[in-house]
Length: 91
Image (cartoon, rainbow, N blue to C red; front, side, top):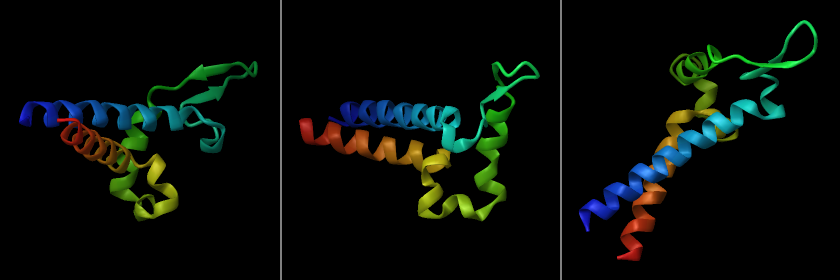
């Protein structure tokens, strides 16, 4: 049973982190991960990922509920907890 709960937590955590990466590509993030170049074509900017991952450690507003979806600690943690709970209910 413990293995199932840990697997559920791992899957949930990975899903939560995936959601964080997805949010970086959304329009409401104003081009954090995908930015237009000089020709107006969208370009991937991977160096933005570590900056956004460090942002909650430097700026406290990321811990308010309206910014939880862009705080990878919250999305990954919530995914892990949800996955663990889901796995424990299925056994």
